[in-house]
Amino acid sequence: MSEVLVLVEHVDGEVKKITSELLTAARQIGEPSAVVVGEPGTAGKLGEALAAQGAEKVYAAESAEAGQFLVTPQVDVLSALVASASPAAVLLPASVDGKEIAGRLAVRTGSGLLSEVVGIDGSAVASHSLFGGTYEAKAKAVSGTPVVTVLPGSVEPEPAAGAAAVEQVEVPAADAGKSAKITGRQPVEAGDRPELTEASVVVSGGRGVGSAESFEVVEKLADSLGAAVGASRAAVDSGYYPHQFQVGQTGKTVSPQLYIALGISGAIQHRAGMQTSKTVVAVNKDAEAPIFEIADFGVVGDLFQVAPQLTDEVAKRKG
Amino acid sequence: MNIVVLVKQVPDTYSERKLTDADHTLDRESADAVLDEINERAVEEALLIKEAQGGEVTVVCLGPDRATDAIRKALSMGADKAVHLSDEALHGSDAPATARALAKVVGTVESVDLVIAGNEATDGRSGAVPAMVAELLGWPQLTYARKVTTDGSTVGVERETDAGITTLEANLPAVVSVTEKINEPRYPSFKGIMAAKKKPVTTLSLADAGIEASEVGLANAATQVVESAPAPPKQAGQQVTDEGSGGVAVVEFLAGQKLV
Ligand SMILES: Cc1cc2nc3c(=O)[nH]c(=O)nc-3n(C[C@H](O)[C@H](O)[C@H](O)COP(=O)(O)OP(=O)(O)OC[C@H]3O[C@@H](n4cnc5c(N)ncnc54)[C@H](O)[C@@H]3O)c2cc1C
Ligand SMILES: Nc1ncnc2c1ncn2[C@@H]1O[C@H](COP(=O)(O)O)[C@@H](O)[C@H]1O
Image 1 (cartoon, helix red, strand yellow):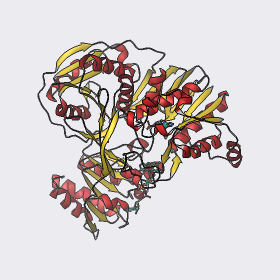
Image 2 (cartoon, each protein chain N blue to C red):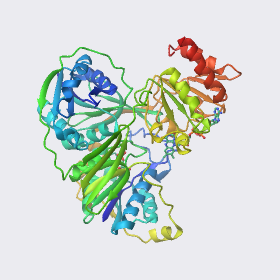
Image 3 (cartoon, each protein chain N blue to C red):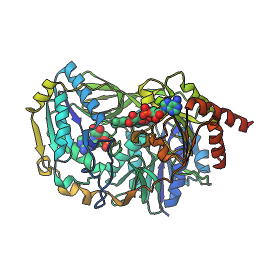
Image 4 (tube, chains in turn blue, green):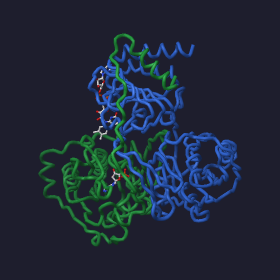
C-alpha cells in the first residue's frame, strides 16, 4: 500500500486535533506517515500521540532553523519526501499555514491542489462545499501527487494503533533570500474555552447582542456547554467582540456538531463560515431572518430571554 | 519603491453565485462583479508606502475583459498604471496556473521591489495564490499582514493568523499579503476617477506575457472537477415562538439529538 503523507500540526509539544482527523482520512487512501517539522526533540514528544492515531511512520525533520522561517522549511521537507517516498497523496490542515505550504508544494512538485476539502475517498477524490455551503463539488488531481488541505472538523477522528516508526530526514538549509525570517511569536492566549475551529460546540453572537457587555450572555451559554464563542462580522465591527472570533467568509470556518446563533441574521457571508455545522440552532426576534432557513431548530424570540433560560436548563441537566 | 498590487475581480458576495453546468467553472454572468474588498486594502497599503517613499504602483490583474472595471477602481484610488492579462485560454485555470501566470506578468513589470496581494479572495478562498507567487518568483513571503513596515531594502510584517501573531522580516524584493485589519481603504475622489481614465492599462495576451497555452486553462489544470451541483436543500427545521419557555424547548431539542 502506498504511503500518504500527513503534515503534523503541533504546538508546544502537543499534536493538534486536526492531525488525528488527517490521519483518519489518510487511512482511506493508504498507509499514513506523519511528517513532523520542528526543532530538535519535537518528534520524540509527539510520537506516542501519533502512534495512537494510526501513524505507521513518523518522518522527523528537525533542526534549529525549522522553526525560524515561515512555511518554507515545511515545503522543503515535504517536496523531498514526495520525491523519495512517492506518496499517494499529501494531506495538510486547511489552516493559513497549511494552505500556503500546500500551494507552494503543489507548484514545486507540479501537482494538483485540492483546497479546503470536507471529505476524501479511497481514490483521493475530494469533496468540496462552496459558496457558503450552497454548492457541492467533487474534484481530483490529474497530475503529480494530490496535495489536499482538509477543513478542521470535517472528518470524525478514529483512533487506531500505528507502528509510528521514526525515520530522521534532513531539513534543507534555509535560503534567507527566498524565505522570511520569524523574529517573534505571540501565540493566542489559550484561555479556558476550546479553540473556535476545533470546538465541537460553538455559540455565536451577532449585532442583536447589542453591546460588548451583553456578550456575557453568549459567553455564559457557551461555558455551560463547554463551547467556543464566535461572533458575526457586524458584532466584531461594532466592537462587541474581538476580531479573531469572527465566523464567516472573511473570518473563520467552523464545522462543529452544534452551532448556536444568537441575534445573527444569517447573511450569506456569515453562513459561509458555519454552514457545514452538523446541527444549527438559532434565536432571533425576526421570524423572517434567513438564519432560520438553515436552522434545525429555531426560536423566534428575544435572545436575552431565551439564552439565559437555556443556560440554566443546561446547568440543571448537568446537575 | 516600485510596487505591484495583485487585484482580482470577484462576484459580489451579495448576489447568487453558482458554477456553470457546462464545465463547472464559476458562472461569471450570474453575478455582479466587483473589485475584491481585500484588494482595495492592498491598493491602499501600496499607496501609503508610495506616499512615504516615492516610486510607482502598478496594478496587475488576471481576468476576463470586464475585469477592467476592477482595474479602473484601483487606478481611481491612486495607482499609477495597470497590466491586465486577459486571454480566452485562461478560462478555468486552477490556482497554481493562476499563480504561474501572475508571476510571469510581475516579471514584465520593471524593477519590482514589492508585490502586495490580498490574503484570500472572497470567491475561491484558496488563500494560497500569494504564497505560490512567492514560490515562483523565488522571493520571501510575508503573508497575512496586519501591519507592514519597509525602509526600501527590507520589509517587516506582523502576521496574524489563528495561531497568533508572528513577526517576520525579509529583504526585498518580497511578496506581502494583507488582511482585513491592515487599513481602511480610501474612496476614490472625483478627481481620481477622472484621472484614472487616462492612466495607462497594458492588456497582455498569453503570448505577450510569454506564457504557453499548455500551462493554463481548464484543459491543463492539475485538478479536475468531476461533478458539481447545488447542495440538497436542508430540510426545514422546527421553529417555535418563544412564549416564556423557548430556552427549555431548545434543551429538549438538544437532548433529543443527544447534544446535551
Ligand atoms: C466581503 C464581505 C465579507 C463579509 N464577511 C463576513 C464574515 O466573515 N462574517 C460575518 O458574520 N459577516 C460577514 N459579512 C457581513 C454580512 O454581510 C452581514 O452584514 C453580517 O453577517 C451581519 O451580522 P449580524 O447577523 O450579526 O447582524 P444583522 O444582520 O444586523 O442581524 C442582527 C440580527 O439580530 C436580531 N436581533 C436583534 N436583537 C435581538 C434580540 N434581542 N434577540 C434576538 N434577536 C435579535 C435581528 O432580528 C437581526 O436578524 C461580510 C460582508 C461582505 C461584503
Ligand atoms: N486572477 C487574479 N488576478 C490578480 N490577482 C489575483 C488573482 N487571483 C488571486 N490574486 C491575488 O491573490 C490574493 C489571494 O487570492 P486567493 O489565493 O485566490 O484567495 C487576491 O486577493 C489577489 O491579490
